[in-house]
Length: 236
Image (cartoon, rainbow, N blue to C red):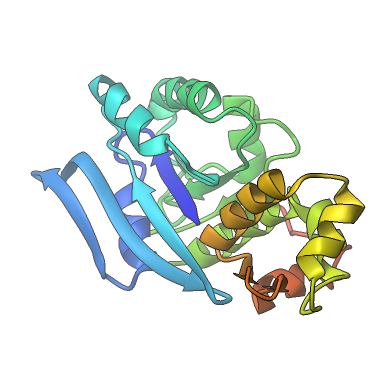
């Protein structure tokens, strides 16, 4: 699964990726400022997550567009202390809406350890963040709530496919389960193969085309088994 980590200049994108990957990330930077990308891999509930961090400076829009291609979700960092960076944040938010329409977003309200850091409710108001987008307070340099923010984003991303995954769960592990799924969805094998390949690439499912069997991964089954899962939104 590919997650884009973006936000305004010096909001903590590189730091949160280093924190999430326990320092096992790469950064192409100049004088501690990302000039190309940050990249790292982390496992959450046996899902392999590829984190792509973008440069925040305004003139790197083309790079942000390139890095956004194929992203399944966006972890958007906001500098909670520096209200002067809100204009930059709004500009990059518009880019996300342009490059990745409809892709799930979770906001990390970063630098909560600093004096004067704004709470989630204030950030929502200042940046006009829609009410259905979760805002998680984080401290990237210590890792506080960093993984929680990523987990919230992953749950929101998986839940976009929840209706299909619930149907798939009925035929999980069955011989000729792919055939049964194709009949229930009233689709042809070409379209179903394309979608199953997409899900397999992201670690949602394992497929054996020879026996027409598929298996949902444990992390995905956990989400399906908790259909009323409530994600806490820190709004105060």
